[in-house]
Every structure is written in structure tokens, then in C-alpha cells.
Length: 227
Image (tube, rainbow, N blue to C red; front, side, top):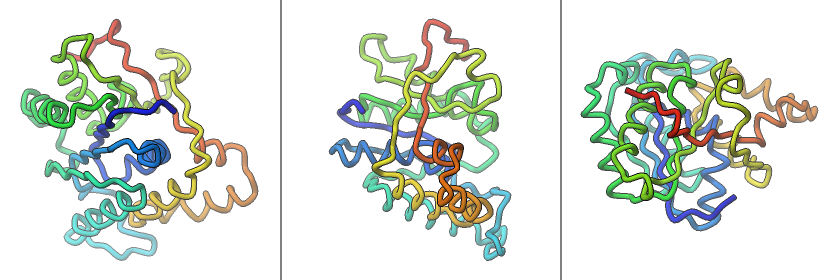
């Protein structure tokens, strides 16, 4: 993995980072690279309340905030930003406000790499709105000064339209950190962690690959379609 000057991670929900990029984050931190994680919401509209349930609609925001802090601690993130937007409403935020919020983060942190979702290939409306805001913000920067933009994508047509991932990180050395980060978000992950760990014990190839390989697409500026 290339050594970066600094990394800015931008996702809308607590646990977005744990599933997709926690191994990459942990590796950067182990390499001595500062990582800032800007989480736009507290995921207060999350569908799960624990299994068995231990949260209520009223208590879930505070629980997910604590889970996010715990996951950040597991990964070693020292700069965690909670941006205060509301879950499931990011798509309705003003485009200029969103772009300026992201641009301010970039200007402050001056990252050599930004990690977020890929617009049009990240399924959830909050994911898509976040991705568009990041692209709009980075687009304001002169091309020769732009940080690298590595994007997570999981829509069914991703490889059909974007091709194979440009970057695949083998995070096997830090896979225990990744699993611990997912466990930190227990209100949302309890339903699937038992099954996943059982598959890992049995060396199920798909489960092992899912945990140990993190895939990214470099944003294709020559095919930029974000309005």
C-alpha cells in the first residue's frame, strides 16, 4: 500500500467505514499516516436495534455515536469528525452547502488521498449524495493539485461499467482489527457477525475474501458525469 501524506475518509453512516475500508484505514495508521474520518450522520434511522433488541428509536442515535467512537478507537483514528447531518436526509441537503462542507475539510486537512463512495454505484441515497458532494468539491481543485480519489462501489453493474477494481488491498495482517471494527457497531452488525465468523472458522473462500480484500475504483475524471 502506497504511503500517503494524509487520508480523508468521508462516509454518511457509522459502520460504512467498518464494512468497506477499516482494514485500509488501519493499515494507513500503522504506516504512520494521519487519517481523518468525517462521518456525516449518526445513522439514527438505522433499521436494526440490536439482536436481541437493546436500543429504541430514541436511544439509537446516542448508541450509534458511542459505537462509532469505539470503532474509531479500534482502528486507531484520532481525528473523528461527526458532521451533524440527519440520517436518510442527505439527498435533500443543499448541493452547494454539501460541496462547501467537503471543500472546507479538504482545505483544512490537505489530504493526498480521499476515500468515499463512487457516485451512481453505491446504491443508498445517502451514499450517492455523499459521493456527489465529494466529487463536486474535488472538482474545484486544479487538476494537477487534486488528491487521489478512491471510491467504494457495490452496485450490481459496477464492473460492467467501471471495469475491475483499480486497487485491491489485501488487509489480512489487520483483519482482526476489521472484525473488531465491525463488532463495535454491534447494534447494526449482530445479525450477521455470528454467521460470518462461523464461515471464517471453516475457511469459506467467499467470507475470507470479503474480510481480507478491500476494493476501490479510482474516480474517472475523464468520464465525470456528476452535475
